Amino acid sequence: MDNKQLAKEYKRSLKLITCRVNMLKIRLKELEANRRSSKQEITELKMRLKPLLAMQRDLREITREVQNYYEPGWWRSEDYTFNRRKPRRFIPYFRNVFEEDILDQLEPDPGDEEGLV
Image (cartoon, rainbow, N blue to C red; front, side):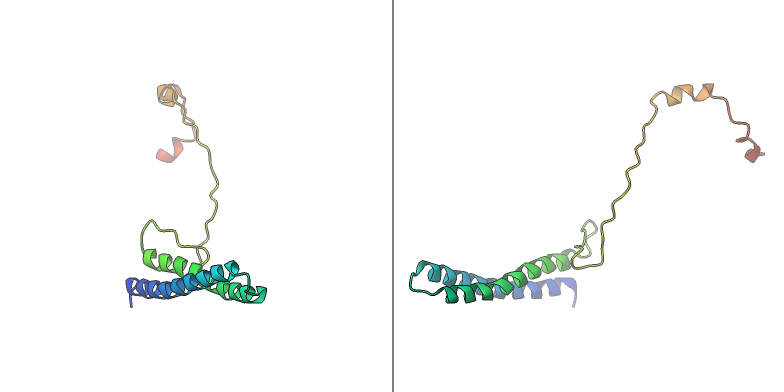
């Protein structure tokens, strides 16, 4: 199984979870609009939605990771791989604009020419 097939499977799972989440959200809105519904029902429905939303988010991110894993410019997520972005030290460099003009005027260091012989 290659990454494209695996990504398709993840997308199928994502669709199933998304359908279920949407159904539960509609049911939650109905319960909140109905004054007869108890707070316990609403709380239970929210508790059912919470893990599904987390699974939906994770599946979406993992699908994106699997699809783009071998893309040259894709930075793999630190959450799902062992990659870590390492801060790079900035080394300022100032180029002397007049450096080329004065190169002929510079006197060579006597120690520089010893290695040439």
